[in-house]
Image (tube, rainbow, N blue to C red; front, side, top):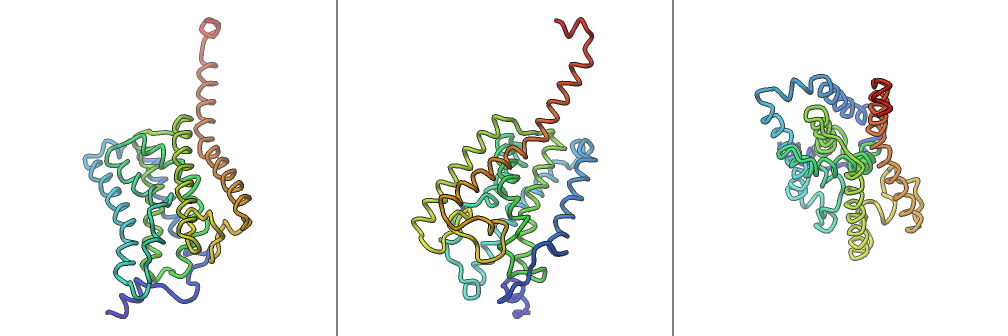
Length: 264
C-alpha cells in the first residue's frame, strides 16, 4: 500500500503525458458536456431546491483541488523536493480557482469579471499545453488534481452565465486587464529577485517541457511584447461573443420599431 501511495502521489522520471492525446482530450470533453447541460437546464437549476448547496459543492471542490497540490508537495518532501519560492501565489490559474470559489458562494459579479477574462486569456494556455503534468500521467494524483482545478474554473464561470445570467462588460474587461498587468509586474520582480529557476507567468524563459509558449523567443523584451499582444487579443476574443450579441439585439430592436418610433 505504501509503495502504491508513493507512486500515485509522486511523478515519473520520464514523460507520462503527451499533448493532444486521449488523456488530454477526455477531461476537456467531460467539462464541455457539463457546460452544455448547464446551457440547457440553466433556468431549471436556478429554481432547484438545492441550488445553493450545488454552488457550495463546486466552490468547495475548487478550493480543495487548489490546496491538494500543496498538500501533495508537503506529504512527499523527499521525492518531490518542494521549494516554497517555486510555489508562490502568483499564477492566473491559482487565483482563478480562488476567485471562482468565492464568486459561487457570494454570486459576485466583480469576481466573475476577473475570472472570466483571466481564464480565457491565461488559463486557456494551461488547457492547450498542460506543461506541469508532463511527468504525471493518468495513473498519478497530479493528473486528476490539475484537470479538476482548471476545468472547474470554466464550469463555475458557465454556471454563473447560464444559471445567473452574468456577463462581462467593456468596463469589467478594463478592470481585469489592469489586474492582469499588476500580477505581471509582481511576477517580473519576483522572477528577478529569485533568479534562475523562477518563471512565474512564464515570463522569464521557455519551459523545459513542451508548451505552446515554446514558439516565443527567449529574448525578454520581445517575449513580453508578444505575450502582451496575445493576451490583449484574447481579451478581445473573449468579449467578442457578447459584442456580437449586443449588436444583434440592437438591430433586432431597431427593426421591430414602427416607422414613427424609429423617427422619434
